[in-house]
Image (cartoon, rainbow, N blue to C red; front, side):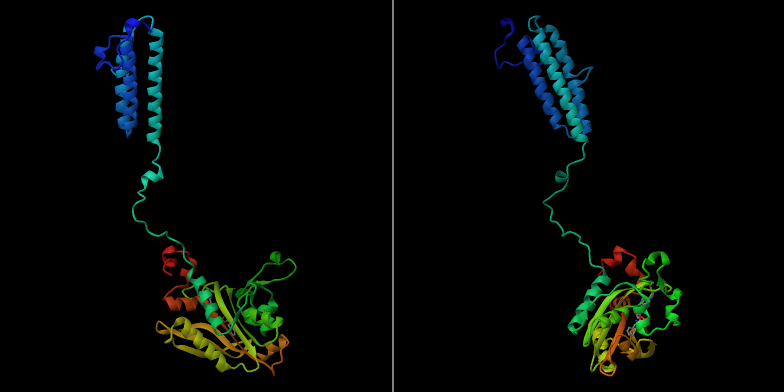
Length: 355
Ligand code: FA5
């Protein structure tokens, strides 16, 4: 750079009108660059950025245009170097403008959008379905009365759902219209044949597999093509109970059921045993509970029929037994004041989150 164009370091021009030497022009370019980059950084919106663009890069009257005019004053010797510097500054500011435009267009980062110092609430966790809660409570209560909890299959054969329960071939309960039989295509080797219509099937499976004394409960799904209404569903749950031993009596059955009902529903619950008929118990009763000014049937029960004991190889002279099957949904409805069984299966979160 020629000596005639030097100016004293630190002696920077205040305005472009003061620019006289090549060094002054270089300094003006640096001042411009610094000011433009800092203005771009300070811009916080697209409107701000546009103002900065017009001021520093505007083609008609921007500050770059003024600098370009000054290039005419540069000595021939320094022109290539200063011209190169001018282009570099222009490109740098243009690139910085584009980068800032993209940055401001991006959605705000979560960390800066959320004030992490605001006191938080605990996360909303899911809840256990009211029926699932009821299954656990039923099993827990019966375990405390000394009953072992067992499971049985939902797909059953006719022997366990009917024959071994003393339900003959011509019994109306076996009518295809009263059950969900599997179509021939599903059967494979011929078994199983239907979705179980009652958990009493588990009585047979347990008695077939072991000797008295027996004291079990089983909780599970059952299926019936019943007309759906406020207290009936075509899939619902039952808890089956079975006790077999040398001295099992009807009085024992009534005591267990009363104790269970008052443990689950409250001490003042009003239970009634109404004479009834089931092919697999003799005598048989329906278990009703007083609810909303009427009796609601919650289950069936009775002394295990000697034919059933014999069918599994027990001697009815040596042992007796009682059995019961309770509708779990109806118990749960009564406890929580739920007036329609369909609520359990609708998956309405407003209902489910109340339990
Ligand atoms: C039986 O299922 C017998 N297995 C009960 C039994 C077991 C009797 C052991 C004797 C010895 P029942 O069909 O009445 O009985 O059904 C028992 C209970 O299931 C009913 O009292 C009711 O609470 C419930 N229940 C029956 N059908 C439905 C349905 N469609 N929807 C909801 N709950 C039902």
